[in-house]
Amino acid sequence: MHLSLTTSIAFSLTLASFITCLPRTSPVTAKRASSTPMVFAHYMLIMQPKNGDYTEDISLAKEAGIDAFAVNYGGWNVDWTQHEAQLENFYRTAEQLGFHLFLSIDTTSVKDTNMIIKLSNKYAGSSAQLKVDGSILLSSFQTDPPAWNWKTDVVDKINSPVLLLPGTLSDDAPALFSDNIPGAGPFTWIHPSATAEKEHSTDLALASQRDRTGKLWMAGIAPWFFTHLSPDKNWAQAQDDKIFVDRWSSLLTLKPNFIEIITWNDWSESSYIGPPADASLAGTTDAYWGSADHSAFRAMSKVFIKAFKAGQDDVVAVDAADEGVYMFYRRQPASAVGTSDPLPLPSDAGYLKDEIFVVTLLSAPAEVSLVSGDAPSVAWTAPAGLQKKSFPWSLGTQVLRARRGDRVVADKVGAAVVARLEKYDGNVVAL
Image (cartoon, rainbow, N blue to C red; front, side, top):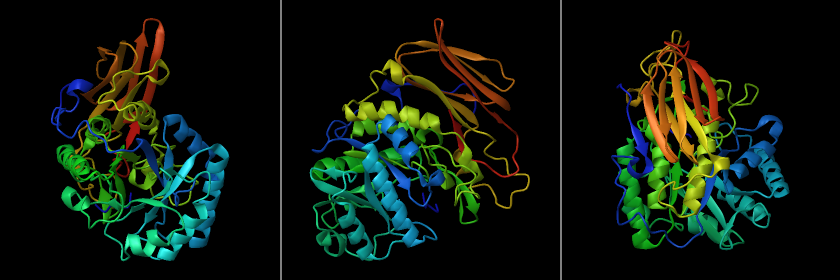
């Protein structure tokens, strides 16, 4: 969101050795400061659902085990009167459905602290307002610290106790947990241009500082990142397939107090786990890649969320009702410029592998097979629990199947991989 920022059968990772570059034991992997672990999803209010109806989004989030939406208030070209009405509708719907929301102030566009105070006071008494130990949760997205002082200009003027977790793009862990930073602790955004190894190193430092100071830490996690809108907003991400499943595994060991999935519905940056964009939705017509299915990321999240809330270091078991077999992949080679594309390759495209990634989350072993285009079928026995494998793709349709005896566990046919598209598409299909 908002950020301007090979090949043989590769690897089979059970969770015990899931991220070979990320150590599984560390003095910071077993401690969590006092708080109930919760998982949120960042919701772009400016990206409205069809007919302005939040019912489906809330129902799907509840089903996945998400505790609340962090409502991104602000954005580009905002009609503030309309935006406030949309927020009110969101709270009313959440009240009716027994769901929770909290404000995440977009400081790149919100410049009036009176607006933050007014909205915080208005919804503090709502049954949909998320509270932590009696305090309303307030967060933010910010590329730089705002012009105001969070404590004296905002928090002290709200008529309710406030738990402030301001957002940051910084990776300076000691500074983020210093007494000079306002709030109960940081909300740390994902760093798409950092490698997975660098991101993990940052997370280790953040967890260590959290344990040292006793402050809270809300960690961000994203299923993907890609945008191709303009010369200054044209980037992929350097973590490739490790950005989501591998990071979930890492965060299970590091145990942040809260996790915020980035995002539920930012189709323009390919970072959504909610339903894909509909062509009729305002603000998405230029983001042609935002219609790709990401339902697998939401389904996988349900299993990780259960493990996180249970305090597990690994996905030690998968309920039969939650098991699934998933694949995700891009629909074109990373280096293939569009046939009629005015933009060059996105930055960090060189980190993307032309592979298909298969994730199994099983209650018991199953026989899995993958057919990529006209390549021979590849088959294996996937174990109970979590496994992730990668394979070089072939052009054509992608078919993934899994069986356990006579029972079909998965039967999926994904969109074809092609040699070149009219315009570059660095988003993934995830089903």
